[in-house]
Length: 535
Image (cartoon, rainbow, N blue to C red):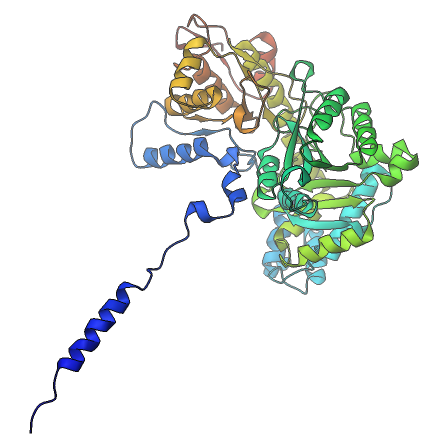
């Protein structure tokens, strides 16, 4: 019996190999093929400077030698990371809600247990369950009551939605108002310059047109109506203006708007048919004795007439700032004022696609707006802890302003509120030339050298936008007083010093010393790169 021929088999292999050569290989999506709006998006607060700080920190942990022992993080308003002590009552309520066995603990006060139980009943018995897309109804009712108490005017839970921090609420509102068109048909959004980079990043993401209006640094970062008018008029050829963003108290500038200033902004918005997005997450953080927080909603109500009934307003609040500082729980809310019911319904439909905001974040927000009342077991401790946090921040706000203004080459406006200072730098020609050679913005070059030589991590002003020809950086006022003094010492003694002749200077004046002593710190003079303790 003869064997079958192998020729047909070989022919099959030849044809199969040839066919495989024409099969296109699998290719990954490249950066050039993704959404171009995502490529344009930048967020300086977690940008290259911060990534480099993380690398240095890892190196220090692995034994690398640097002129410093640790990174001083002044780049982000993360209160607890900076050492702020959590408010006991907030954590007690959350602890009981997470572990109901603590209902039997004598360590947890009864009012914390009652709030936890009340919340659990509203979410089906477990913080692991989904809530309504707009947020737990009980929490929205408590927020409405908080707003009514704050402003003395009605608030409806139907006009309130919970969010993953105030940032998510901002993104939903700006996404809602995007036209999705190109060129001059894009939605125009007016934002303050300097601004919180969330806004410029979100505008890029939704392809909205940025209309920057400059705050006036020389008068404490004030907002001028004439500036709004000029910037809006110049932008009309490039977009369809729809939104005016105001951050009050200011981030990164720390200013607090007056009642008259807010009223002028609302009249401007009414004249120009603009929705007002009021970022009011720092409403508890007011330090200047001659300023107080005025909500946009309250001032709008006081204006009366057509303005009060027609101007569309969104107000954002968060559990991440204030005296709470609970950044990681991601709790926040947004109130809608004068919205068309159908527009509100469409917005809430979009919210349903994200299922719900974090339930523990909603509980955190609920405790913020429904704190212990007089006569309840936790009232005195809660009040004392809240007062201590805000008092410490007020002292550090004044201290940072005083210290910066004692350093050559720095100019710092009063830190009236929020959690940041935004000092202006007078960079010498040598630094300007070095930055140009490095192909970097001058302030970015400066803060990079500052990080590499001292371990101080701040954010360059170019990440927030600023007037052309000016240079700044943003620093938080959150680090402990001792760390703030170390930071100032580094600014003076490093090769990055802005002193025009390199001579040492006296850092602390009498006012700064008084503040430092009240914070319990024993400050020092700096002279010829040595420390000389005062006491």
